[in-house]
Picture (cartoon, one colour):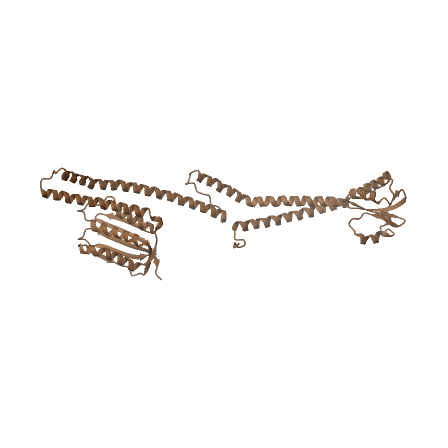
Length: 438
């Protein structure tokens, strides 16, 4: 068992409560004993209670001897009376010799001091007539002991009750808190996830409450994210259906013209075939992007990350993309970062992000305006911005499915992906967490 001693805050509080309650209980017991002893001592000293008890005991013993016709040799019967009267000791002498004693508090070695002539004052010796002659008897009485024992019992009982009450007082707050937590968990079980768990104190119970409340918030957030994802997917499918319907309708129209030979010249036929191919490729492109989006969306939990040199990786990814675009007449202004840093990413996924970004540039950017690419490090984050002018002669893809795929991939890397459009300026901002290079 590797647990450290007193590592639990609740355990510390419980031990302190036990020690405090025990200390208070002992104090109460000692107070009861002190006050009770003084009261009993005062009563016994000022009253004739003990004297009367002794007189009654002597009278009862004489009556017992007389009624049973006892002699000094009837030790067994005398012993029976002594057992019934436990608060007395008897010393019986005949002819100055000790013939019987019932002092159970003294062992046999003490018998010798009482054996011969009585050592007690003559005024404490009482004549008792036995059948074999008169004898002298000394009686020691301890009637007050019974009341001291009762006092001790009462003191123990009151102290124990006080101890239990103090412990209950100290733990009652925690028991109440446990009851509150139990009721609140039942409320959550009933489906009311917006009910906040009460957090009181600074111990294991409060930590448990906080963990339950954090789990509640995480569950709500997960449900909200699932709802957002479901809504986004629904909107995406609706928009994509619209985008697919337009080229598909045109494709069907061209094929019908070809099938029923409604064209006028061979040149018209070639145009219809060419347009059909264009629409078919457009449909293929949209379906490929849709497949890519849902492939990325459904593999978020299985992303394998690797650490790369950030400067080298970005330079490679950007140069690979702009090479073909520059050959097609696009102009670029690149501002790089001189700060050394590392990225923990999935390379294939990040390549998809840059593929989609630059594919979007090739289709919708104005090639006669400079495309600005900038990346820098700030507050342990990598900021990549791509700014371009929009080519207004081309119709935009209403679904933006490629950029939505970029957003999903970036969020899988715990990053951010933002799109801003103002007038004819289109700005993409990619934010990723970095590892500072050593």
